[in-house]
Length: 204
Image (cartoon, rainbow, N blue to C red; front, side, top):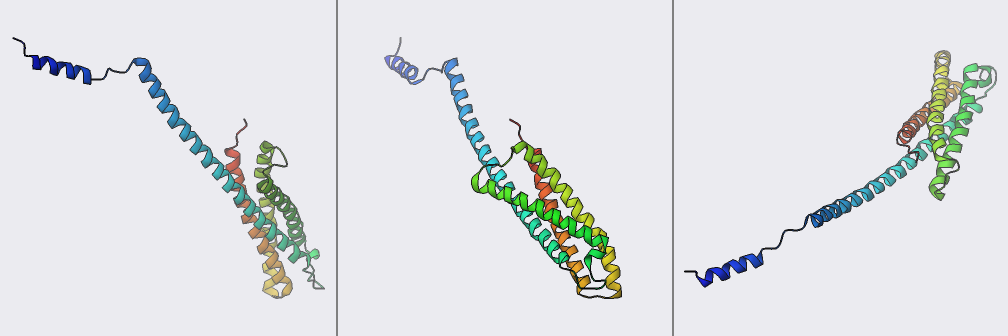
């Protein structure tokens, strides 16, 4: 004998149980969730990339600005290092080399700093980006090598002179050499930044 209460309970359980989603609905929900998460991750990646590029541009400008200051100081100090008799910088090949590289480094870092500042202020590059990446990387390395070469070649001469007599000529020579060493460190850091930017360069 069937109890009517049991039939009503079974009907309530049947009505309260929702039907399982269709296979097509389940796939669409999964695809929508994945697309939502992917778009959010893509936006965050783009923002992080923009921040990293902006930081690299500012770091490169600072390094080249410092290189410009130190190179200009080396040029001024050595060019004015003329005190008569044997205390004339142009009588020594090593000091002429220091002056020549200081002039070259001043021109290079000045042009690069101007280009970086123009790009940061206007958002436009003066030259194609792909070519600039190679110019920055190789230019920084070449000028940094010339700076360390010139400074190193003048150190032995200056040390020999200071053993005999320590005067304003030798002090000025040592100061110019020190400025070129500092310019070398600034360009070496700039070369590292340029190398990182070149390694992450996209050609699309």
